[in-house]
Length: 205
Image (cartoon, rainbow, N blue to C red):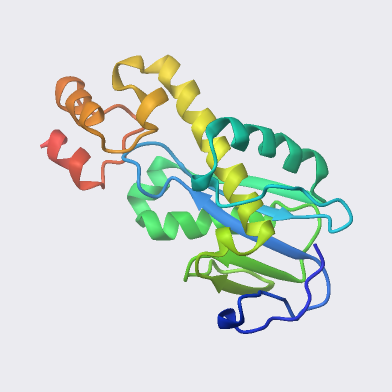
């Protein structure tokens, strides 16, 4: 997607000022008690628009899956990256999230002129970047990135459920639900639990 000119948010429109390719970046999995944090970067093709892009949290799982395939097929390029549980425990979740975002941007086949990142924090990048609060509902490229990251992480949870079905990762996706907390107390932590997160650390005491 080629960026245009940025106008003030209160005008109700977001337009961008840097000529060249525009990448959107978002993450999934900051809150769960287990698994990697995932980030995605997407450069959309303005000549091949994708209908229905929105914040992944507002879409059904089926709609996210369909859009995931469409984004992968029709975007100019996209990249999905992770920061591992070990990195989350060693760096903290914020720094691990920024690391995953940086890896996603660096994994793009094309170099963007500007990167728009959902939220209010930026990873260290060697390209012009801007944080956009609630960008996943304002900027199509960020919406696309949110969908890729969410679907990738949900698929990881489905696969991990096959290895550790007693925790129910296919349902709660790693979040601290009552079912998940009961499984943690009963079975203890598995290798993919984030030991630096308080609910997990309490079980390990």
